[in-house]
Image 1 (cartoon, helix red, strand yellow):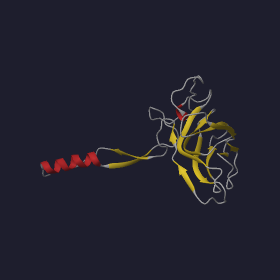
Image 2: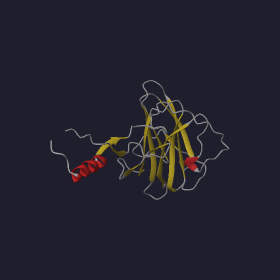
Image 3: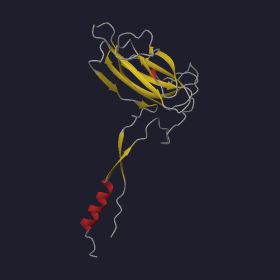
Image 4: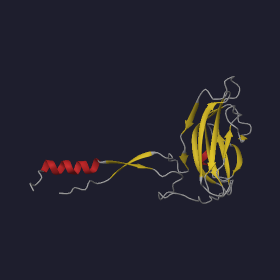
Length: 205
């Protein structure tokens, strides 16, 4: 076999370093070590301790932060009302779960929050005001005119829960518009983000 020239060797090395292979991030919350979290540990924290503002605060006792999102809006008095709705489904095979949704304004402050228990296989909805198109399980209390807000989903018994969040037209069915908000895990990483990794090329003669 004819030996490779220096240019050929360089080309092989360059190809090995730039060969893209798609890897899909595992669905659901991911730990710092990169492992899936099947049953998220409880994050115990004193209610007096503030680590940040809004969604950066420690969760209430017994709860774990599962998802976070930003872009929350609520406009109840415009004649063309705009709201934010959060839908969550419990995909555990047998165990119900208590889920808490918290919504914050653009500046740190007390959340507009509410809890619902979701049976195995069931779905529940939280909204910042009544939505014509949805059967709201819970209307978050006293949410004012709000733009550039944020929110988070917390769980108690287990973390086998999937959720989405969207800003939508509150007045019509079907809504005139509905915009999905990207969902992040409790470490701030996009859930189900398509990422790149690079693997070495194995050359066989």
